[in-house]
Length: 407
View 1: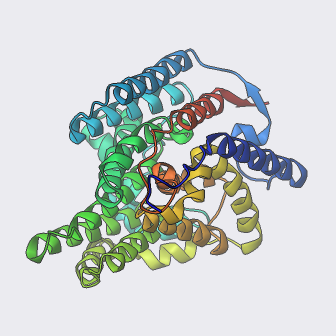
View 2: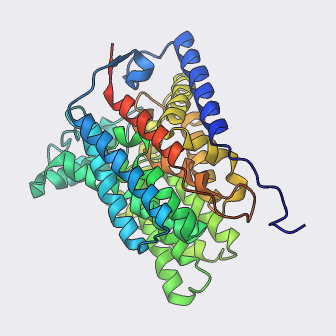
View 3: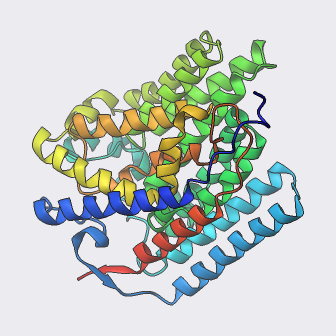
């Protein structure tokens, strides 16, 4: 039986939406029954929701309508603009989405470096214990202050780079058509409400960049020094991501899996060497990454509690597309990204690193959790339409999250 003779598989969008709503309802009920650990703020929808929209939400809603409408027009006209144009427009739209959702509510943290950066590195482990982050975010905020740049806008603009970088990785790994369909899902993701001013968004951009570089390194037609150079860049970005987020290191596992899947395992050597450069430099400056990792680890009990809350939050903030993505993970060549993100989340929970800030701490993994949303319905099957209904549903979730305030 040929592909044309096989019965077409029915659209599962309604099932994905219903499954997501059911899982979220069960998760919220479990949080309500179990309560939340003391000592931290959880997303408003988990701590007692009160609808209190800001005037900027109208702009966010208009942007969402324009993005979905524009994508629908392109699909109807069968137009395929240059991919670099898709990336550029997606970046600007994602930046606008994050700023509009976070306007008046989210700001970049204050610069924590009181002396010089070397003194900050020397004293970092002693001053930052359980639940802390590596010093990269603090050094970034110090540099932004030193340059006189607006903190919230700069941090958000850097975090929004996650979208074009992840799209580049998706195109290389999954193909051009799935990557184009993935663009509106990323742009209007519900977790955009948390990107504004979040230094974890910068870690997400570095994570997307390292996988994109690893994908280029392992291209079928790229060998020799060009491949080695891209693999080395992936390692450098991995080392830099390690200075922003401890769990983000596990995204390096996505690159390792990708190299093995493409039978380019030797590139692991260049990536591994590159990953050591910046941590070694930081050690020479007085900060030992392993010591910081040990100091940031909390006790297992509260971490598991926060990890459960974090999983509910992840389900909410990735929106309905995450259900379709998990359902089709076997059908996409992008599975290394999703597996790497899953390992990172498991490491955070089981390793005792989950805390009250788990919603933003997992920003580097949210995009990868939805990478299979545009995968074919069957392995090597025909492309699926752009998931506009799932995208619009996710945008609505983002608007509701941004409009929430603790009761």
